[in-house]
Structure formats: C-alpha cells, structure tokens
Amino acid sequence: MLTNSRLVHQPHDHGRCISAALTRANDLCSEQKVRMTTTRESVLRLLWQSHQPLGAYQLQGQLSELLNKPIAPPTVYRAIDFLLQLGLIHRIPSLNAYIGCPFPNSEHSNLFMICSQCGSAAEVAHNTINSMLQSASDKANFTLQSQCLELFGLCPQCSEHREDTDNEQ
Amino acid sequence: MLTNSRLVHQPHDHGRCISAALTRANDLCSEQKVRMTTTRESVLRLLWQSHQPLGAYQLQGQLSELLNKPIAPPTVYRAIDFLLQLGLIHRIPSLNAYIGCPFPNSEHSNLFMICSQCGSAAEVAHNTINSMLQSASDKANFTLQSQCLELFGLCPQCSEHREDTDNEQ
DNA sequence: TTATTAATGTTATATTATAACGTATCATTT
DNA sequence: AAATGATACGTTATAATATAACATTAATAA
Ligand SMILES: [Zn+2]
Ligand SMILES: [Zn+2]
Ligand SMILES: [Zn+2]
Ligand SMILES: [Zn+2]
Picture 1: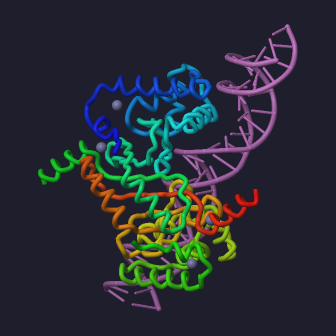
Picture 2: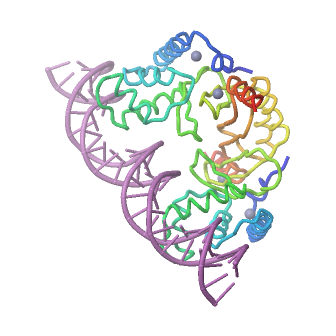
Picture 3: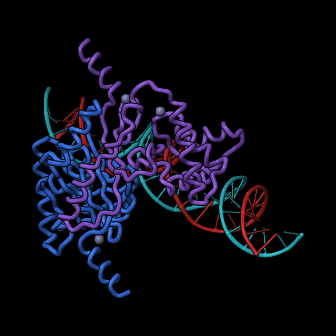
C-alpha cells in the first residue's frame, strides 16, 4: 500500500512536497518530450500549495493573481488537461476539483480519502483493493479500464476535533 | 456480493425491473410518510427505462414530453433530490448523471461498473471490498462516512463485440 | 529565413445546478 | 365545509463548471 495520508494529515515540510512534485513533473516532461510551460507549471504549483483539491475557477483566480494578468477559463482547462494527460494530477469528480498526484509513475488506484470537514484529500494506492476490484470485474465479465474511488469522511485531525467536541457535550 | 450485473447486461424482462422499483419506492414512501407524487414517480420511472444513467437535462426533456407540459430545471432537481434522499437513486459524479438503485434497502457500497461503450451501469454491493475499504480507512485514522466507487470499462456485451472486431483485423 | 507545429489569447456559448419567491395542492384541525 | 399550516410545484433569474471556434503568438525544425 502506497499513500500520502500521513503527509497530508500531519504537519510537515510542505515545501518538499511542492519541489518534489515539480521535479517529477519536469522529468516526466523531458522524458515524454513535451513542454512544461509557465502556465502549466503555475497550475501544478497551485495545486500543490495545499493538500486540498481546487476547482478550475479557483485556479483561474489564483493563476491570474500569480501571473498578474487576466486568465480566461480555456487557459486553465488546457493546463489541467495537459497535467491530467501526463498523470500529474487527478480530477475528483464529486468535487469538480483537481489535485496533484503524489506518485504519478507507479500503478495506482485513484483512491481518495476526502475530508468533508477540512477538504483535504489523501491518495491511497492499495494493491489488495485493486486486485479485488479486478477480480470482481472479471467475475462480472467486465473489462476494467480505469477507476475512480472516493471515500468521504473525517481525516485524522478532524476526527479528533470531532471527538473533543462530542465529549464536551 | 449483491449485484444487478446480469440483469443489466443481458436481455431480460425489463418491465419487471421497472415495476419492482416502483413498488419498492411506494412502499418506502408510505413507510417514511412522504409523498410519491406524479413528478417524482415519473422521474423514477424514466431512470428505470434503461440501465443507463441519465443527466438532469435529459430527464427534463423526457419528463416534459411524458407529462406534456414544459418542465423547468428546479422541478427535475427537486425530484432528483427527493429520490436521492430516500436512497432510491444514485448520482454518478463522473457522468453528472443519475440512475435507479436496484437494492435501496440493503447496506451497500455504491460501486458501479460503467460501460464506456454503451453507457450501461451495473451496481455491485461487495462486502469484502467494503470491509477492505473500512479497514484501510481505519489504518489511516480516517473516519469513513460514505463512498463512491466508479469502475470504467466494457460491459460483457461490448467486450464481446470488441473481441469480434479485434479478430477481424 | 521560412515553414511548421505547439501554445496561448479571446470571445462566445454550452452544460449542470441552485437561489429566490410566488402559487397551488394536500392534509389536518376546527 | 372552511380555515390553517405544511408540502410540493411553477417561474424567473443566475451561479458554477466546461468547451467550441478562431485569432495570435511563441517555439522548433527545415
Ligand atoms: Zn505536503
Ligand atoms: Zn479534515
Ligand atoms: Zn432491467
Ligand atoms: Zn456496454
């Protein structure tokens, strides 16, 4: 099992998250002979500012501020599409939002644990779950191509707070 | 494991799917002392016309035709919200679409196998997968509240056709 | 340089969903 | 039956998310 859950839900040197992500991205771009432009890198950087998924129009606003010029939706969506293609980010459909992928190279399951309180989202690559999904598909004669798994609940931090307030009552 | 996969992907007496769904719905409504109105029942019926999820505006068009009068979006969304609340239908976020739930009473996992060819969606309630997700959440100190699992690929029928055309090449 | 491709700018519009407020319908009590 | 209160629906406007189409600019190749 591969996960960034601890990082997401605990204080950490987040600068390293960001720079690691950017390094991975640049490497992947040279490898695939595609261009990491200013717009694209900025969008990726913004998505890595926090461990919370951002919507396209949130990105638009922040990008506009960052680059100090007006940015129209297509620009944002183009950058998003590019990053999605390369597997550097994911779309979280139930939130209409996007988030950086912590392990863009490895096979993984697109399983997210999304906190309904603070909005953070941790990604988990879980081999056992993956192979169960595969075998469930096989049994149903369903040719599995891709998947999108979203778990909603309370992250470790918000769970604790919730217990605290529960106890106070 | 509970699934409507066979029904969805094989020829069957679909009238029974529809009437069973409507009966379940009416029972649930009396039980919960809420009203199954014409609009609501029509929407549910439309969602059960096929085993393919429908978008809100597709529903709007079909509802308008069925009731022979103009229907505005809020009317559709109200019916959808009502049916979602009762657990009679599900929203499939990655499609922005809605589909009838084949087993609205039982505990289940909201796992869908969605055919990218024909658009059909089968629902699967898989205890083992559910408990794995629960234990993965536990391990991460994540308080699981709800989930939404979408598998994309080819349904049995479309898989066969695909093989056929593959062989022709 | 020139041609070619790739990326971005710009305008308009499609698609999905909700807010706000008025009207009608249903159920309950008098 | 009439009055009341609650629920559902009608109507208009608008928010939020996403894409189409075409012009312009920037990077790469010939
Ligand atoms: Zn971090
Ligand atoms: Zn949280
Ligand atoms: Zn059926
Ligand atoms: Zn199919």
